[in-house]
Length: 150
Image (cartoon, rainbow, N blue to C red; front, side, top):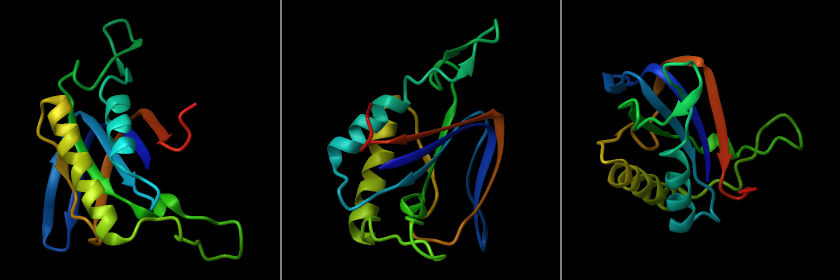
């Protein structure tokens, strides 16, 4: 799994019919699932994200987690995080999980994040053409790949 984690002051997911999810201060998590991913990967990732200290304390130091600041979570599926661009001009998505597997792990990730954080997790619609708007606070963007845990 690859997660792009963005600290935001607000973020929103829209479909053609309008907004389906929005958050204020918190984390926007773009989640890409590859065919080699499993429940161990998602649990490791959730345990890595929740305590991550990327919010500033009163002294301006990044010492606080999303939970410490009562931040919200917004998760959006994004298979394109597994794009391979080595050959040619068209990205290859061969490593991305098939939709059935990816959707199950995406939904399990959302549920695990909600359970472990104790907060409801907002999310996009799997497989849909979505428009994402956000104000990246910082900017602060972190990429985590469960296949590279060093």
